[in-house]
Structure formats: C-alpha cells, structure tokens
Amino acid sequence: AIVMPDSDLDFAAQHISAAAFGAAGERCMALPVVVAVGGCGPDLARRVKAHAEKIKVGYGMDEGVEMGPVIDAKSKEFITGLIDDAEAKGAEVVLDGRPLVIPGHEKGHFLGPTIVDNVSLESSLYTEEVFGPVLAIVHADTYEEAIKQVNSSPFGNGAAIFTNDGGVARRFELDVEAGMVGINVPIPTPVAYYSFGGWKESLLGDTHIHGPEGVRFYTRAKAVTSRWPSEKTYAATMSFQREE
Image 1 (cartoon, rainbow, N blue to C red):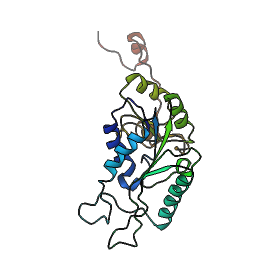
Image 2 (image 1 turned 135 degrees about the vertical axis):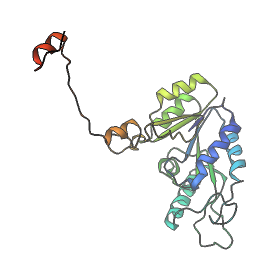
Image 3 (image 1 turned 135 degrees about the horizontal axis):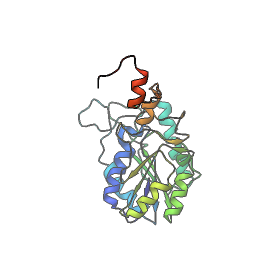
C-alpha cells in the first residue's frame, strides 16, 4: 500500500494495523509492505504501533484473544530471520514481537505484531513473502517513486493507496500493476460477482477464480445462428396455407 502525506494518517493507521496483523498476517491478502511518501513514515509507524499494541495475542480459545500463533516452528524461524536481516541492514524495529511469550503456552509459535520502519529494498523482509504479523515500511519521496517500487514487484495480487486527493487516486488506479486495487481500502477483495485474483506471478492460468471469468470457465458455450422468414417466404415453404 502507498500512503500519501495528504491522507488521514489516523484512519490509515487503524486499517493498516488490521490488514497487516489480522489472522496473524497468514492470509494471501495480508498487507506486508507500506510505501510511505513524503516523509510520513515515522508518524505513520507511531500511529500503527498504537493500534497494534492493543491486539491481544494468545491461545485462540482463551477469551479476548484476537491473534493466535503462526502455523509452526519453521514459519516462526523464517519470519524472525527476516526481521533480523532487516535490522542488520539498518531498519528500525518500531514494535518488536519476537520476544513475546504467552504464559502457559511457552512452546507455542507466537509472534507479536511487529513494525519495521525504513526497510531497505534489498532486505529479504521486502523481497520475500513474510506470511506473518510483520509490517515493513519503506520510504519514497514522491508518488512517482512509490508507484515504481510497487510495480517493480514480480507479484500483483492486490495494491492500495491512502490519499485524500481524487486525482492521485485515479492516477493510481490506472498506473498500478495489480489485479485488485483499493482506494483507502487496504485489502481490496471484491464481492463475489467481480473477479478475485491478481496479475503477474500472483495468477496461475488465464482466468480468475470467480466473477464473470469464473462463470465462463465453468460454462460450455452454445452458438446459435437463426433467421426468421418473411411472410412471403413463410407461405411458400410451409406445408400448409393460412386462411386469408
């Protein structure tokens, strides 16, 4: 997602937190990266942190728990390795979920919401799919630089922009190379009668899952060619004559 400096940062932070950390970040449309434009990154990180710190992490059957563990030990090790690598390359860990331990569930594969600011574009945290509760924030000076970063990805499942400028929003709709686009909507998953799915390496085959393309995929077409005769032709070709 691109966050423009003119956007409502409180609104953006609330929805980015939900998009990045919902389902522990383990969903195809999770929001792993934000491109903060025009120096709004540190302020945005602070606001997202305020929301993320309120998320209760723990055993899913316990009352009030909003986020459970990641899927297994291998996944946790992979995710923490990405955070370590980004930190070693100079990124700032604004909120660190690595030390989290849930009493009574010490063997669980828990990671708290993690926010990493000023992530290098060469960092594995930026180039790899995290699939965990980690938000990476990268910086861009202009919209042009930000859209270039977004479109340089080999994947194109979904993309979003936060802005209060309708002109910029319209430009983003046309510029971005992604199959699903959100305007102030961080997870732009459409309703069922529109096609769900991405572009580039985020799509297998020629058609998307549902919507008009899905209907065509599961439908065998029938072509009908017809012609209705005129009154004169009708009288000449039928085996009976109509009374005058």
